[in-house]
Length: 263
Image 1 (cartoon, rainbow, N blue to C red):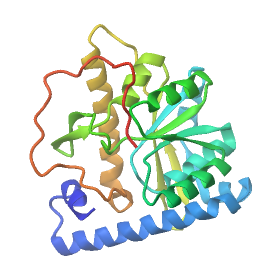
Image 2: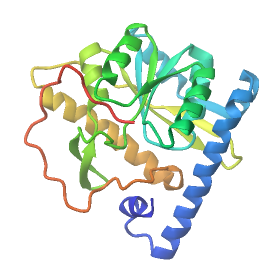
Image 3: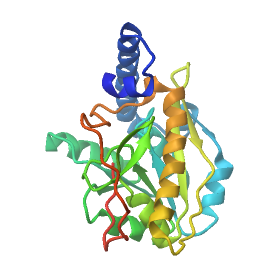
């Protein structure tokens, strides 16, 4: 975590960086505590804990009638935001990485199901489930600040190349579903603000690699803006940037039959 934060704030002295990492850990712990409280909350209590912002952007995306692909970094309590959306809009899908031990994963998945969240396991074939939900005009939430399956493409992030999954963009280009960047930020009162940024309505051109790259750069620029503003709430424990520089790809391949996505 501290290494990732150093890339975000390279000018920050070591002692301050360690304090920042400690605040990050504290917020991360609070987010998990809040998650385990959610199943015992009614809609009123859930609404009191989370204030929406940018609902007009979500409405504009939903109005397309093609479902919505919500993309987010691991910030704040993304689980709380997902539960709130499910309470308001019906069942939503969330793609997740299978964590260890398996017993914990099954317990967390069961809690998500109780919150009207359909768990989509992170896999090469997960795109099928995502597309199926989009055809049902559902919302699908994808965290895309980690290339867990190592199937992504290199993009600059805070000035240095690293790999990100392009699956959400590939699916949006294929289905016509809008992409909504979203963030769930903890405020000074230990409540949350769920922010929906303006959606991306992608139109395929004859230059597919350029379509993918342009959309990815827009999404990552939005991620950078929020992470820079709230570095103590970007909860990524694994190194985002490799020790050795990433070699840029010459082209982005055409979308495969099953596009890979990230958690």
